[in-house]
Length: 237
Image 1 (cartoon, rainbow, N blue to C red):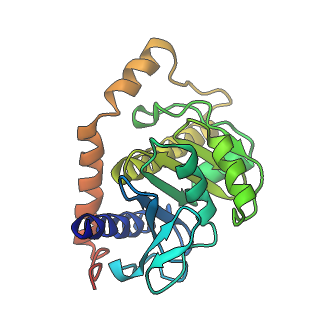
Image 2 (tube, one colour):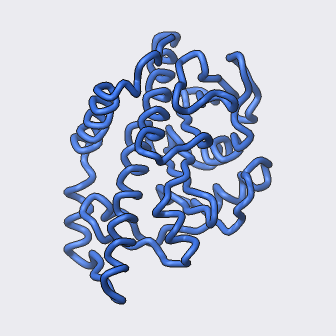
């Protein structure tokens, strides 16, 4: 168990550092991972910088957000994570980030549409209208209910939440969502009506662009790029 927890801590740190490097996270935002077979999860601490996060900044909590291990406290929005985990046995990782283009489209009340190959899974993304911090259990329950069985939910005027089976999948969805939103935004500047993926083409594109090999390929790409730029230095200190 100790080895597994150490490996998961490292994955959380890498995910946070890499999401911060590509500006999906800023000075806020958080990534969590459920420890398989338990009612506990790991998450980056509230006070730690996302740009210099290390394994010592990862805290262990129960499903009520109670600190079990670590030198700090979890983020105030831990209810996002706990309530999704309670509702969804299939979810092993949750990401709450603040992506620019998805948030802009939400502010403009423009629904996210599948317009780019890797964003083909974007369809009927639910929108949570309360833009405040999700820092109460009641709000966490409402958000988890709005997410339902989907992989993402847009928090109007705030950011997004992604839920997936594991941390690499949650990272990949986060990246693909923003890439798709950027393409949609840019295309909308060129024409009042844009072409979206639909029908058989949408289904085929969705299937071909969501494979374990693609998830690992994207993770490896961002990890190696972050390493070359020094963005992962000191993560085990």
